[in-house]
Image 1 (cartoon, chains in turn green, orange):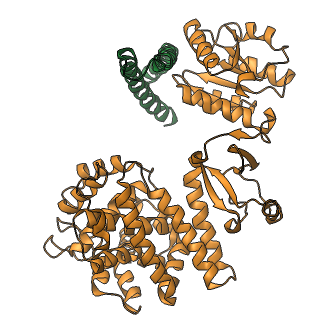
Image 2 (cartoon, each protein chain N blue to C red):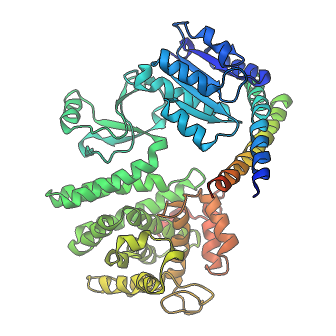
Image 3 (cartoon, rainbow over the protein chains, first blue to last red):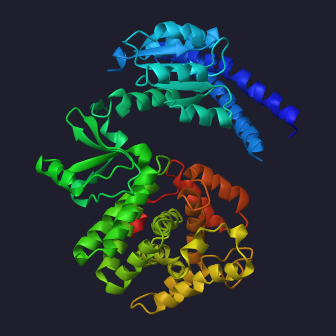
Length: 74
Length: 459
C-alpha cells in the first residue's frame, strides 16, 4: 500500500467514525424507546434492522482499520 | 450510583456530541458538553465532575493537549479518549500521559459502558471498595477451600454480598495471601468470584492450580479433588449456548465416570497428572476431545456403552505421547518446524501407544484411536497414511473432535473460535479429510438437537 493511499485510508477511517457513531447511538436510543412499546411493533423491528446494518458497517470499518494498521507496522 | 456521575463530553462533531450526550443521559449520567479542548477548560473547575470523555482531533485545543492540562492540574480526574483512527505513537503518548482508556470510533453503547465501568471501578476513582449490584450469572465462583493464591492470577477477585452485590477484594496481578483467604473463610464466606469475561484466564488458572497440586505434597484424595475441580472448569468452558444441553450433560456424565475410573488407578491417574503438568492447553484440549467425541458418537446413534467409554478414554489420552515432547516444540507454529522437528512432532501418536500399552486394561481400540487420530480420509495423514477403509471408525470420530477442539479451545498459535464458526471452518476446509458422517454429527450438536438421542450415551 503506497503512502498516499495509506493517508487517504486513514483520513477516510477517521472521517467515517463520527457520522456512523452518531447513527449508531441515535438508533440505539430510539430502539430503547421503541422497545417500551413492545418488541412486536413495526418500528422496533425496522430499527433493529437498521442497527444490524449499521453494526455490519462498523465491523467492515474495523476490519479495514486492522488492514491499515497492519500496513503501518510493516 | 451511575445516576450521580458527572461526565464532561468533549467532541467537535455536533451530531455525535448530541447523540452521545443523549445516550449517556438515558443511561442516567449527568453530562456537560464542550465542542473542543479550549471550551472544555471552563468546566474543569466544577468539583462534581467525575470523568472526561474527549475526542483527540479537535480545533483550538486537541484531546492530547487537554489531557496534558488535566493531568497537570486535576491529576485525580480520569480522562478517556475517543479517536477515529488512533495512531500508534499518539496512543502510546496518551497512555504514558495517563489516559484512562480509549474508544475507537465508531463504537457502540456497550463499548462506552465497559469503559465507564472500568473508569469508575478503578481505585483512582474511588470505586474499588464499592459493591456493584450484578447478576450472579455474570461471575464464576471458586470454592474458597480450593482457592490457591499466587502471583499468576491474571484476574480480579470478588466476594459476593447479599443483593447480590460483588465487592472486588483483589485486582489482577495482586497477590491475595492465604491469611486473607482464611480471614474471609472465618467470616463465613464459602466462595470467591471472578468475572465471566475472565473465563479464559480462569480456565488457565484452574489448570495451573491442579498442576501445582500435583507438585505439592498432598494426599491422593486431595489431588483427585483438585483435578476434578479443574475438569469442572474446563467443562464449563467447553459448554456453548448453541450446544444441545442434554447432549452436553450426557457427555459430561460419561467423562466424569471415565475420570473417576482413571483416578482410581495409579497408572492412569499418573498419566492424567503428567498430561496436565506438561502443558495447560494440552489437558484442556484432551478433555474437550473426549467430551466432543462422546457427543459426536451419540449423535451418530452409537449406543454401546463400551464403545462410548473407549471413545472417552481415547479422547482423554489421544495426545499422551506429547508428554514426551519438548513443550517449546508444541508451542511452535507447524509451518515453522524443520523436517526433523516435524518427524519428532508426528512421533507423538506412536509414543502414545507405547505409553498406554504398559497400562493394564487398555483396550486395543483405544490404542488404535491414539495411533490413528492424525490419519485422514484422503490417505495423507500420519503415521500410516491409511485410506478411509483402513481408518478405525473410532479414530475417525476422534479426528473430528480433535480438529474441532483445535479451533474452539485456544491453542498456542491460534485465536479461539466460536463453535459454530469452527464447524463452518471444518466443513469448508476439512470436509474431504474428515469422516463425513462424524462431521455431519458434529453439526447436529449445534442445531436444535436434531439427531441427538439423549439416552444413547448410557445405552
